[in-house]
Length: 187
Image (cartoon, rainbow, N blue to C red; front, side, top):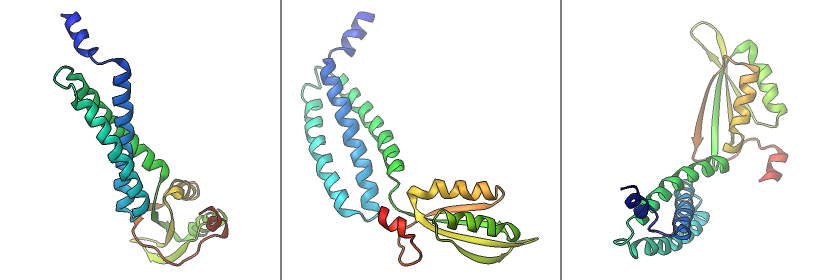
């Protein structure tokens, strides 16, 4: 029985298993990034990724479909590659962090200047608005930033006021406002 199972699993040569898995992982990771890029309005990079994606798909799918009846494990390896590709694509997208965010922090009035100064010293533009809480006066801080800077900004806020109410949202359109000269160079 174990010999039959082993023969079923190893019916596909190891080089072909590696080819199917690696190529499918790359193809689906590219697909994930393409969808995200197109959704964020980045049409040119999305189109280039689509071309690479479909080329890979044609060659991988034809490799899997050819001889599928004799070696059904190809379909399983193909499916595993798909799942791993989705996972890898989401990790890559998170690392690339394409897009803008609006971070809003609701802070006690007497602690607001500390947070504002820390954010501005780090080169971030901050808009503050007077607000009225249920029991105390507060300040709402609004920070527009690249998604790449989101974690650093959240950390700065937390280090200076660990009781702050913080909300971060993705922004679909942003024009104007303050951009540090160093950040302009980094673009």
